[in-house]
Length: 292
Length: 290
Image (cartoon, rainbow over all chains, first blue to last red; front, side):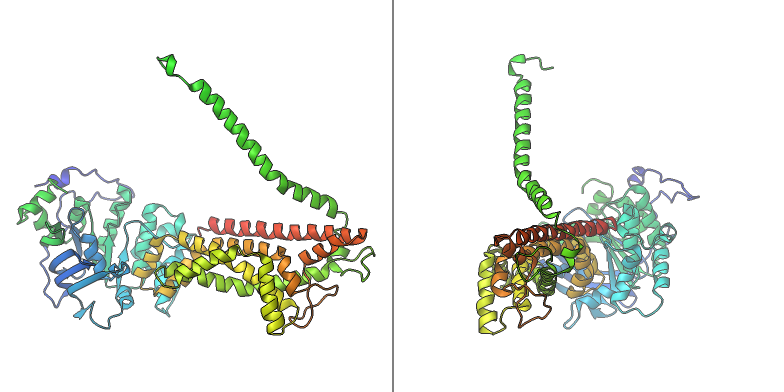
């Protein structure tokens, strides 16, 4: 069952880092995290379906996302993970003809209810993309962008510093805040994008394969970052990297593509259970690398 | 190298490559020669008369007289091109933004079509149009404003086309980033897309200005030309550098022709300055990560 751990390369021990646990214990939790009830969940999904025109891309999604924890969405290509993720902050709507049915509840409110402004949704649910996409502005202006949009009245300098610290980037850029965000390395750019996303103090941050374009060391930095961040923020991460899901998440949702090409949830539960004791054969096959 | 020498055509390929290189080089030379000649001839003929007096005085009332300058033309060009910029740049960029952000609007196809058509309209037609509509119909008479509007009409399609190209080049991923942060569409356009495109937009504007500053035919019917320095917007005929060059070159007097050469040099230098400034600006912005 530790086929997941074998293929890892030990991370570099720099700056007195202890290499993280190589066993998939689900973000170092000692006890598995149970699925939250509707009242304490960050997001409640009931029968969520996403259509592109008449094509149903995702079907019958029903599960609750735990607050202040990392939930990983895993599954092979085409299983609808990214589609589901992007429907949470209504980024799917940028594609014409997209339709969402079912209930997607955030704090009891249906995100797709009548009269709900998608812009307001996005201000409370942040997103980090696969390829780092900092604005061609200074590091400072990148982080300050969201707060400025929202009319933040407090000390912007403090907010920028706090966000960069939370993104584990402050020490590397504190002397060059006026430099362009594009002048940073790939891993630094992604952390800048994380800082930018959390600057508006969202309760939930969605991450769409945030480390897939990065080198292994940056990937690990991002995972450690998530461990810190989740104390204040709920994180939902789509990842192709199973070891990453095993290392960094508290709960895991495994999705697959059905015969009608719609994505659906096969199984979801505490990460430890999913990787060491899955209930479905399909799950077991996927996490041990037999397909996908 | 190759075992089978019978199929080895490396030698003839080398020869053909060399011939192609020579042909291309000659073609480039042929293309560059007129450009270089323009500079050389203009400098040779104009440098003698281009001095402080020329830049700061207006022409003598009698064309035969020596000395004097094209100050009134410089002022006229500056005023008309300045007003034309104020008209065509906001309109042009707004049009380009519309066409880029709303490609499915029913207006988009016709707008792009007509912009394309406008780039090919002979400048004298634009002059005729402004003459008929503004100078005669509206009754503005000859002057700075009609001239400026004519130049604006000529600059507009250039601004729109180049702005559109630049805006298209702004990658979608930073637009997505802005949307994901909760920006409305106009906020993304204003605070992310336009700044990202700024250096390209400036370059496009400067190229449009370089064209506008050199237009002569439309000015004949709108500004009309004058020997006097004037700064009024309407009511008095206005002149411009290209117009003065045109007039001076046709006169049989040596002095007038000398002034025309100096004016030509002045205009070429002005356009060169603008183009170099455009390059510097876009280079600086690129260095800053724009």
